[in-house]
Image (cartoon, rainbow, N blue to C red; front, side):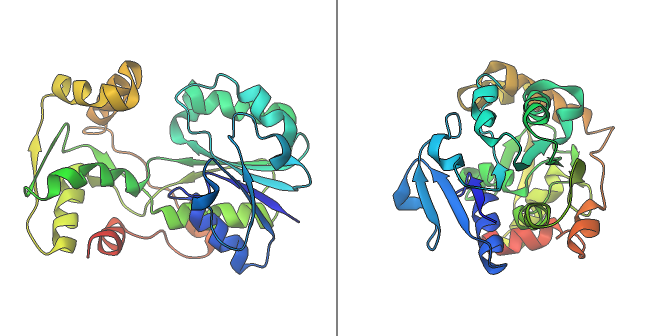
Length: 260
């Protein structure tokens, strides 16, 4: 079989490529910049919104949809009709939104799908990097409890789903614990070898900072979601362990890998 990996230069995609190569599976990648493509794979330049020739001759797809809207998803997945699709989704897909719309579009073109619904990626903490030098991370809702997952765990679940029989399975892919955002910052400080503390930011100020990156609707939704997690933490799932055979990696391990 040949697997097409979209988002192959990103946080999860590069590990999916590595895992497939280690398993001896031929890999094709769809990238905007071929110069950044991993080595030892078939490279097609293009965009997931119009995969074109990248879909020809592949048996399975690791799908990353990087947009804040599902506009154009029907055209994007049409070339993958009847193929195995493993989609990096989100827990909120159960409530609809862009992730739910993408899942619905995938179900229209194939019965061989697997949805990886993550609560959040640990790599989102990299957004705090510009502030770490000051020893203070100023952001909203430090007591929001999140079960963010290591990108390598996501990739390992994806490789299993791509190479084994996980037809019509929806997995909740989380870390092994629910930590407050303030605790995440403290653990990053421990990895850096210097104290880093959280400073609470007014929600409206946080939304204004996020608008240039996420747009008004997603910025407001993100900050309001964090507020909800203060009293209602993100769930912790055992699906990573069930699929991969090992427990999900803790956030402290992720922090040491990225900041030590």
